[in-house]
Image: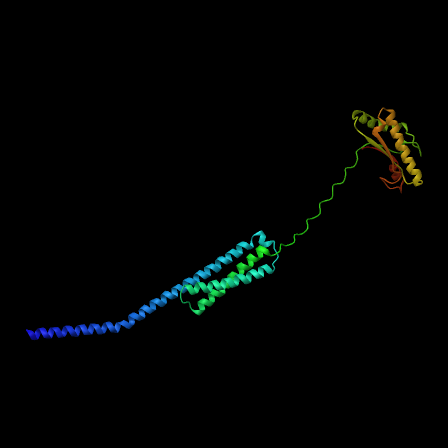
Amino acid sequence: MRRHAAQRGARTRITASRAHTRVRALTPFRGFATRSQRSRSGTGRGEGGTMRTHAMVASGLVAVLALSGCSTFRDREWGSCAIGGGLIGGTAGGIAAGAALNNTGDPSNGEMAGAIVGSTIGGALIGAVLGHAVCDPMKERPAPPPPPPPPPAPAPEKIATLKRAHFAFDSARLTPEGERALEPAVQRLEQNPNLRVSANGHTDSIGSDAHNLRLSERRAQSVKDFLVKRGIAASRIATRGFGKANPVASNATAEGRAENRRVELVID
């Protein structure tokens, strides 16, 4: 009985020794697995930092596109403010990206370089846009077009026109036809007591300037005298002589000269 018990105890010790040997053999793999897990965890942190950096750059580009559509952005000249803002923004973006990656783990050199370059570009774009929008000079606006010229003054209203048949030849005396031609003007002046008129005398180009000027003045005065004789107050009637200065037709023909010899009664 004691021999059988000793044999069982020996077999138990052998089994325990073998198990201990197997555990020790597995220990290096367990440590390798732990280091691998740590390495993968660190890589995950580095990739997460890189993704955040890319997201920041993308957000900056979206902001640049949004700002480029505003009127303040379009109305400024590109200048030194945009350049300075780009330099400051690029430097700040690169530094921020490096610091962010160092705080997230142990990134590789490629990850570090890519993140810094991307953040530098994004920061430079944002800085340039902000500098441009804040202090670059405004574009000079084109001068407004000149105002349109005022409309021409309306032509004075004529209430009577006396032609050559209404005066004796080379004279200021009214003919009966001339007096009848003035009757509608008399009626209108009687019906409108506040109306004032001017009798403007004109001649053709035959004769001297002085003679034509005097003739035009005398004919205008004859029209006024007739209106006053018919009861129109003299203060309501002015007279002007223009001689041959304002022809309405060519003085090269008899018909044209006849048109130019006239007295026009116009409303002042």
